[in-house]
Length: 177
Image (cartoon, rainbow, N blue to C red; front, side, top):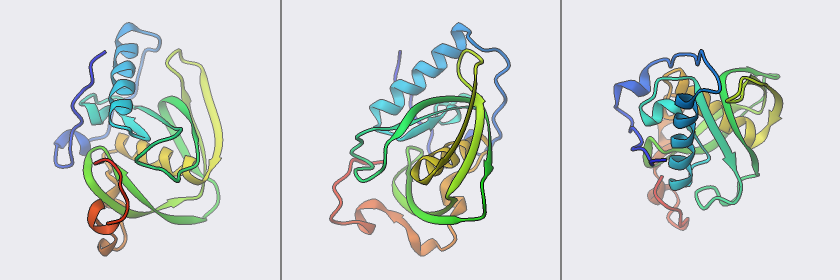
């Protein structure tokens, strides 16, 4: 499947609420998911949301194995999550550095809930229901924000903690976000 262009911050679609998926296990749904997967892998992303490739549907894909963009990150199982619902577990919030394929070359210190319950469906309509914490919870929150028209810079509390990756971390050698 083709690698799609990733919309960048400023594109109006990235600020809209995505529509729910109504039909599962269709050729159209599988084609969008395959495009998302190929694009995410090509860009070395930790995740991607359908709006980032210009599709206004509530679909996210995430997963982190060994990733040059996140060399110290804990592993996150590869997941296709459709029509997600997320609920924070507790009030514990932690700030962590995030980047985004739609905000290339930049990083920001973003507060996120440390623990999370999420549920939704896989491409076949089977339910997914997980309790997660740490980096896994951060990735899910970041990707699901895309479905509600929120980009990570909108969550940064102190804009002095937002900038170009090569300026903030001159010794870090990572590929462009």
